[in-house]
Figure 1 (cartoon, rainbow, N blue to C red):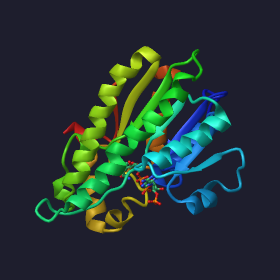
Figure 2 (figure 1 turned 120 degrees about the vertical axis):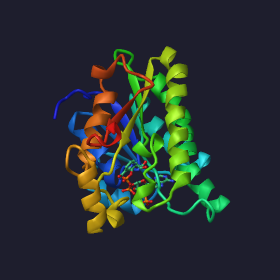
Figure 3 (figure 1 turned 45 degrees about the vertical axis):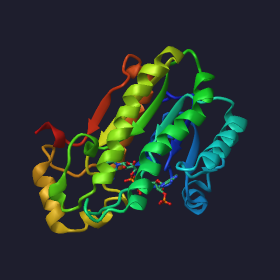
Length: 254
Ligand code: NAP
């Protein structure tokens, strides 16, 4: 815990669950003022309802009108933004031969188009952010943007492709946003214990396989992801842009 984000305004998508919730808590603990964005208002209320200092923003990151309305709310409340974390994402499974276009489109809409829409809506606020600090966008990709873990028994070509698109969005936007003093980086988590992975991790054979395959010998925690995000969002990372920080216990090393 530190005060490194004191006086700074942050927004996190998918903030009501798993990694997003841990990221939100970390930024808050380090002093940021927070907009928690999520699809389900009841989930936001049940997680953040007893903390009026947190701005709850219901928005569907895949819907441009909804994103615009959400950022109008943030603009009214904060007037500017210093940190944006594109964390909301979905995973679906299905073999390539059986995958419908609707399933493909849905995963891309949330995982790739969502960060584009949210970053674009946030951009004027980030440009207006605290010029004494670099402002930061952190996108949550996945090790699955870089490698394909087909041996998990869960074919997910649309998820892989959508995270690959987000990786390249990160790199391209890093170049374009640099002149505005905005850094854009990615955190690529390995397997993290969240509702997203609960079903897979409930199986002993999957858990044993993961533990055996992970050099650091444990499953990741949402707080591991949050610590990586906080670093990339901070001034300690002021000369880092277009990069990916792997938070995977060493999974992608070999
Ligand atoms: P999670 O527990 O399912 O949380 C995702 C949150 O995003 C949920 O609150 C969800 O709301 C929200 N969301 C989904 N679609 C949305 C939309 N269209 N608009 C706004 N919010 C939406 O998942 P997680 O494990 O924390 O994953 C978070 C991110 O980490 C994702 O981008 C995922 O790809 C990435 N990641 C996770 C792992 C892992 O092992 N867990 C590994 C690599 C990368 P609902 O619950 O209402 O749908």
